[in-house]
Length: 108
Length: 332
Length: 118
Image (cartoon, rainbow over all chains, first blue to last red):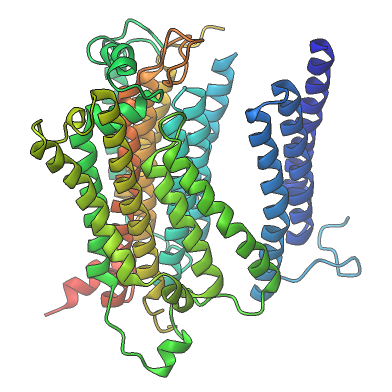
C-alpha cells in the first residue's frame, strides 16, 4: 500500500513540476500579455494542484492533508479573480491583445 | 541534497537582487522586492526557521509590497531618471567592504555545525528547560514572550511609534466637503463596477480574519503568534479598503477605534508586567499570575501575544489608511 | 561535490553588498528604501544560517525529535522583520512628504533645488 502511495506521489510530483516548467517557458516565449496570463494562470495552477495532491497522498488522512486541501481550495478560488483583475487593469491601461490578423513584426 | 535546494534558492535571490540594480521601472522594483522576500521565506523553511518564514512571507511579500505600491501611486513618477554622476566611487567602496566581510567569514564555523559557539550557552537551556518551566511546545513563542519578554515589549513600542510617526507625517484633518465624501482625489479610490472582484473578495475576507485568529491563538503549538496574526488581520482590512475605497473602509473601521486598539495593545503588554509587580514578583514575571507557575506562564503569554497582535494589526491598518487617504499629487 | 561550509555566509554578504550599492549609488529615493530592504533580508539570512543545526528539527517540542535548531536567532529576526516594515513605512511616508515639498524624488534634483534656494 505504501508502495502504491509512493508511486502515485512520484507521478503527481513529476507531472506538477513538468507543468510548472512548461508554464514558465510559456511565460517567457508567448507573444503578448494576455496569452502569457494563460500560461501563468492555468498551467501553473495545474502544476500546483498536482504537487499538492501528491503531498496529500503521502500524508494520508490527517489534519495535515486537510490543510493542504484548503491550500488548493484557496488557490483555485483566488487564481481566476487575480487573473481577471490583471486583465481588467491591462485593458484599462490601454494594452491591446495581439490578434491573429495584426501585422507581425518578427514573423510567426 | 538539501545543499542543492539551498544553492538554487540563493542563486535566485542573487539574480533578483541584481535586477534591483539594473531595472529602472519603480513598479517592477516593488514586485521584485516581493519576489525576493518570498524566496527568502522559502529559504528560511529549508533552514528550519518556520516562524521566521511565516512572518517574512506575510510581512515582506504582503504588506511591504502593498505599501510600496501605494507610496508609488502617491509619488507619481513610475520610472527612475538616469543618474548623471559616476558610480565608480560607490562601486569601489562596496567591493572593499565585501572583501573585508568575506575575509571575516573564514573564521566562522561551518554551516550547520552543532559545536558552533552560537549553540552553546543559553540556547540549550531554553530548549531543555522550556518544556518544564513554561509548557508551551513552540520554543520560539516561549522565548519571545517569556524569556525575552522585555525585548518584545520594546519592539511593540517601536511599531506603535512608527504608526504614530506616519500619522504625524501624513495624516491631516480633512474638512468634510462633498468632494472628500465622494472620495475624489485620494490615493486609493476603490473599484466601482468591478463586481467579480468585489464578490469574490468579500467572500474571502471572513476566512482571512478567521485564519488570523487561528494563527494568533495557535502560536503556542505551531508557527504563529501575535506578529503574524496582526499582519494577517490587517491584510483583511486592507483588501477591503483596496476594493471599496478608503472612505467606506473608514466608515466600517473607524480610525478612532483603530487608534485606541493601537495604544491598548501596548498598554495590555505593560499592564501584564505591572500586574506581575503587584502580585509580588518582578516586572513581567508570569509565574505569579495564576495559582501555579506553568498556568501563570500560559496566561501571561496568552495576554501579551494578544496585545502584540492587536498593536501590530492596528499599526498596519493605520499606516495603510493614512497613506491611502493622502491626496494624490497634481498631475504634472 | 563538497560544498564549502561558508557558502551561505558568502551569498548573504553578496546580497548585502548589492543592497548597500543600491542605497549609496542610486539616486531615486524609493529605490534606496527597497535597496535597504534587500540589505535587511540578507542580514536576516546571515543570522538564520547561523542558527541551523545539522539534523535538527524546527524548534517546536515534539517527542519524535531530540535535536532542534537554535531558537534564539529566530526570535531576534522575527521581531526585526516586523520592525523593519514599520521603519520602511515611516521612510515611505517621509518620501511622500519630500515629494509634496520638492516635487521630485530624485536625489540630484533635490540637491539642485536646495543649492538654488536663497
